[in-house]
Amino acid sequence: MTPTGRFFCADAARTRGDSIVGTAPHGSAWVLIEYRGGWPADGFDGLDLEPGTKALVFAAARAARARVLLVRRHGRRGPQGPPRWAVLRYDGTGAHRQRWGTWSRDEDLAQVVQALATPGEPGGRPVVLVCAHGLHDACCAVRGRPVARALSEHRPDLVWECTHVGGDRFAANVVVVPDGVYYGNLDAGSSVAVVEEHLAGRVHAEHLRGYTDLFPPQQAAVAAVLDRFGPAGRHDYAVARTFRDGDGWQIRVTGGPPGPAAVDVEVRARRTPRNRLTCRGPATSSAVVYDAVSVRPG
Image (cartoon, rainbow, N blue to C red; front, top):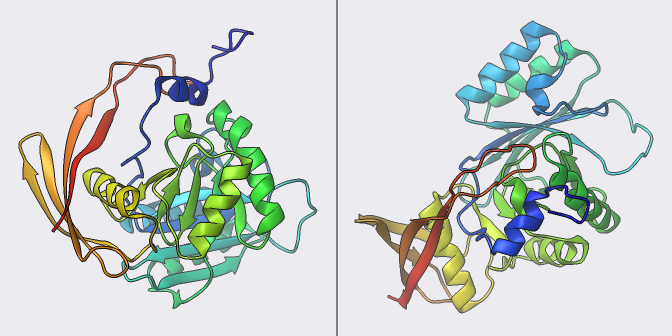
């Protein structure tokens, strides 16, 4: 609680020392829709769009297992042409696949459906998303907007504010897509350093929530390797083998110089005590934490 009695989930999570490791939602496709008006608490679902087009976009995104996010540039800059949309995919090899377009009428968003049905163009620059969805969770605005401002000053062509990406208590959250890399517990200064390092091909364990193409125990294993052996590029390590072992996992992570060729990581899961994990939800719940208990070069 703050001195005024208001609860902020990100403050509480930091006080408890909540682990961010292994908390990136699974997925490899994203639909971005620029929307310059107010964002409803439930994002795209809450927009008052032409019902037929909205239903088509929602169904196509669900079929492709794509996450739909509303985006906008930071600040109060005047509109720069019609709003944009994008379909971004991660194919596991480091090659980005993207389709971009514009829309003026609701019906124009049917182009998103067509884009989801095609592979997309290879190449393109990464997109840096900063969750600043205040109506969904206060911490996303309080902590996200200063980060969006700082990053926009450095990379105005790459950075967008976006709706809810998950993990409100880890705000400020930044997601680099289509790389599919989640970072959390950021502030204005650390966000610039983290993003610049990422764009230079160096992912650090600090602030890393995980890679979205991996499941939570695998995310924890890769983070443990980065923590032990130092930063590496997004594709420098791969999960080669995962075995379930009782309440844990034995995971082999492979890579190349200057890191080790193979690392065996033992990951265990545990549940936290029940806590209030979001600003909006009064109920308490327990979270699963993934701990790397052993990291051994293979």
